[in-house]
Every structure is written in structure tokens, then in C-alpha cells.
Length: 123
Image 1: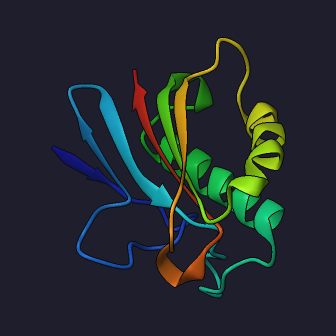
Image 2: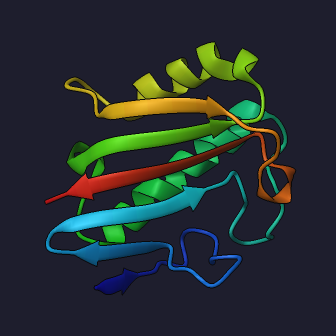
């Protein structure tokens, strides 16, 4: 296994890697809407989701991949009422054929985030 890391995304806030690569499969840890320069959470769902996608793109780039390599997306939402907005943001970041996905409402996210997104990508 090879650990993937970029300064364009927030550093891991625990004992884990931003991403792990093995046999051309990349497992990207959940990304929050944190500004990597300040460590502060962005204001509002849309800003947090946009930052989370930016972080995912930066990590994919560090692994020599892009959004077209993403096979599976897991989205954790603080409030399922943000689902429609999530779909709009998601559609701006992916194109058909879309990766598989699930969206789950959770009680709480790290740093009281509103959304966290993880992906699995393959070369």
C-alpha cells in the first residue's frame, strides 16, 4: 500500500492517510469542507460540499487520476434536506456515466461539518 498526500487538501485529523493506493485502486478518506490554509470549516452546505469536491480532485491528481476514475462515492449528510442541493453539486463534478453512490444522513460529522465525501477510484 502507498499513502497519497497533498497539501492542497486538509491534513488528516487522525491516524489515517488522505488516501491509500493499492493495485491501481485508490481509497480516499472522507473529505470535509475545511479550508486547508486556515483549518476552518466553510460556511454553509454548498460551500462545504464544493470544498470537499476540490479536496477530492486534489487527492486524485496527487495519485495521477481524475474524476473520471471514480467508481464509488459515499456521502454523509448532516441533514437529508440538503439532498437536492447535493445532487446539483454532484452533477457539476461528475459526468455520465456517473459513479455508484450512496448518501446517508448521520447524527454528527467531525468538526460539526454538514457533509463529508469519500471515494474509491481505479486506474
